[in-house]
Image (cartoon, rainbow over all chains, first blue to last red; front, side):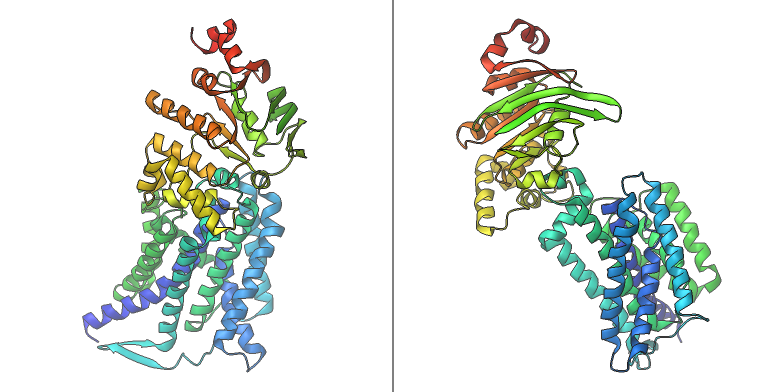
Length: 293
Length: 235
């Protein structure tokens, strides 16, 4: 494979990976913006999304991949709602630390439940898309599954954009992020907005897990790493900044595949987490600036 | 229309209001004046449901609203223009105004109210696609008031609207509030540090000092009152 093709291959893979990072990170940034919460369980929603997709496909042969995605996303979104009302809502006025600790506890609980439900060394999601490969240009090859992951993620981002920019509830969510007191003076119920933000975060992360699950062996402890990746994206894109998360996610995905594919896979995490430390020193609220969504 | 009886409000352990009672009749323009820290903003915030009173009651058009949450109180027609404008900085002027009409389901009505706000504040129409955070102080104040009007309020609460405004803008603000009161017949409770401006346009007034009402009466009488003149009118 020529050098050019190698780079292109990494770029293609990076965009696929990045698009899922975007989904997880947008959810994380919504929690930051609306709930003022660092949601440690965000990566675990992603992990659950992948495993629920696997499980739905296992339940019955009449369930196909798209249906499994829908089931997984709905289940995890509902879980997000439960998490909010059982875990977050009771402690939300008890200071800033308590809700974060709740999400830490939830993360561990969810991970261990996943280990119990799916014991062993991980699972592989088989879909009809995994095996067909294409050569869009040169020697670069990409499976249909990867194409689907990317397109699905981008479409979901598009829908989210329309929701936030064009619908009344979406605008209310943005307003709540920017000035919660003023928002309540418009008649916007801050409780509903907080629950909505949590459900939306779970929804997006689960969708990310469902879309990218078939690309590798999924394991219950992949939630934590996904969370860290989301945090990096938010640091690049700015806290509470949804368009920034889009840029940040794609940038991170590209960074990982380009460094990993062209230099060394072992150094990827060192480079990436080293970059976090640098960004925190230079601009603690995020490179692209923290602003309202 | 609005009856506040013996309101006691605390922030943690410190008393901010020590038994305040005020009334606003329909169609009136009532002001509450007082120095910094007198409790004026606390009063407005408590009426709006942003803060819970420890004792006392608030009634609006016969309904008790003392312990209702802020977003429910808005739905009853009590609309506050918050201190410091409180615009949504990363949303456009138009989006801010749309948020004012959040509880209204009637699209035609919303458009009518929007046109009305544009006629009162033409600059908001000029800058409708500009991000609210980039507007000047005076423009943000107009936006905040316009946004309040978009809710079709039965009573408008204004929390120190002249704060941070240049004198010329304060005059314009006073004219606007008077017009809202006289031409558009909106009942207004105005809380102000700028006593001169406030008493000049009001029907009646209350003077608040360290959480208590120390004086009340017709605006003209208050303006003539010697202690008011010395303490608040700089005479």
